[in-house]
Length: 307
Ligand SMILES: NC(=O)C1=CN([C@@H]2O[C@H](COP(=O)(O)OP(=O)(O)OC[C@H]3O[C@@H](n4cnc5c(N)ncnc54)[C@H](OP(=O)(O)O)[C@@H]3O)[C@@H](O)[C@H]2O)C=CC1
Ligand SMILES: CC(C)(CO)C(=O)C(=O)O
Image (cartoon, rainbow, N blue to C red; front, side, top):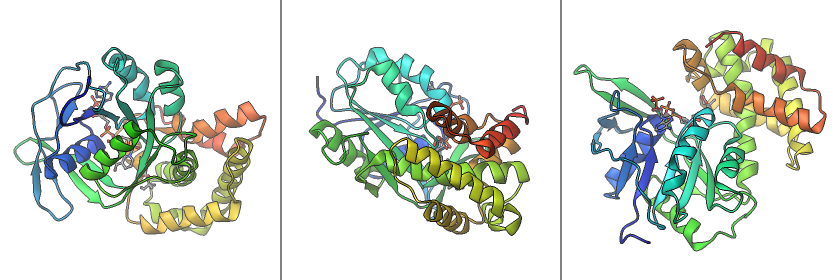
């Protein structure tokens, strides 16, 4: 079963999901959001040029998707298991599915629920967005930082099926630029290297990203990067310790005025993504018999905040 015009089905109505919806809206592409509740669903997006992009408030019940539709899950890793279990009966035609999150572990969860052969894309984005409430009490999102999205099928390089290539084109049309690195898993680990240093240090010390450049964090930064490289290399990914550290510093500088997502989660008393970030490194290290005391400490200290 295929539809004439493929629809972008977006699970939830969070910051990134609604940003993607706004991109589709601007390009006149068919999209549908599936929030858990109507409370706080963003009504519009405040675009980067300050223009207002109204969002369709027509939400739907999940239904069997057409083969050429695309289902995007811009969720936290800890939200994926229940979302994928819920959606599984509606995926009988195997439309392309896109996981879009920080941290790692989503691929493993999707494989467990959908099997190893499901047409799956993994993505990471450096666009920035957050939810707010306006003076009329309506939720909206602000597109706060222009970035780009990298996407690919794990272990497939650029040998993508037409179904997956079409899904990537649809995402690129909705929210460019979308690029396809040679190895998406490597790209996700690269993003992990940034988040495993900046996120817990900014959250634990209540600082903006730029402050992790301070010399007081030099030892902990370097120790985290060394552990990261040991584990990544043991998992078959090639990373160099000096380059990883330099990349982390470059991102901290470029996003210097930001408060990281983990800092904001801690500030607002929300669950953090620590399990999918430093926790993932600890989990992989355990499997490979590698000692990662500093990542372990980061996990323990964030968890001790009892969010
Ligand atoms: N925001 C940003 O600028 C960036 C975010 N990211 C990453 O993208 C991912 C998503 O982030 P973000 O959009 O900020 O997060 P949000 O918390 O804003 O969005 C997640 C949304 O998904 C909803 N949700 C969770 N489970 C389900 C479900 N089963 N069915 C329907 N809706 C569901 C949540 O609803 P509810 O409110 O009911 O829990 C929430 O609205 C994270 O991994 C984040 O780190 C990456 C780059 C930038
Ligand atoms: C790159 C960085 C650290 C930007 O703030 C981020 O991804 C986050 O805050 O989660």
